[in-house]
Amino acid sequence: MAEDLPVQEIELYGRIGMSFERAIATCLHQYANFSGRASRSEFWWFTLAVTLAYVVAAPALGFLGLALFDDPLSGRAARLLLGFALLVPWLSAGYRRLHDIGWPGWPILLPSVMTLAWPATFIAMWFFGGDAKPASEVQFAIAQVLAVLLWVLTWMTLPTWAVLAYFLARPSKGAASASDPPSSLDEGGADGAG
Image (cartoon, rainbow, N blue to C red; front, side):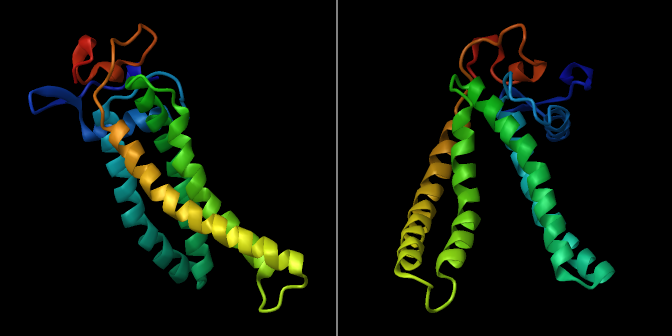
């Protein structure tokens, strides 16, 4: 587990925090661990790493798929796989981060599910009303309801991400228990003042 990893801490603004490398190692080591706690530095350093990995790797995978297979779809498939591979440890780190501020972990799933609902809604709209003249009035009505649902999802997802980011940036609450991983104490100490 995380106990096997070398301890690397840095001091930021008078507080001890987890280093960038340690955060990546910890989150990947706890790939799908949804129990315990994660500090602010662990979560936000890993979020930065995931963002950078996707921003750098996504175009590279697209070019690689085009160069090797002469098929842009293979690059898209590789980017999609990368996104899903990075989503699981990010969700688990966010889940543990919410535990660290005294919340249940499930709210991290809400904006992710809302975001994943966009493609499903597009596919359903295409299925029920894809051509210019839908097969029936019922299909046309279903396509209209789905279009409204997509519009609502779009406008609700962005504020949901913003509110969640605010709470993920909050300081730790309370002391860690003996079963928590060592990384839960890297900010604020046992009093949770970090």
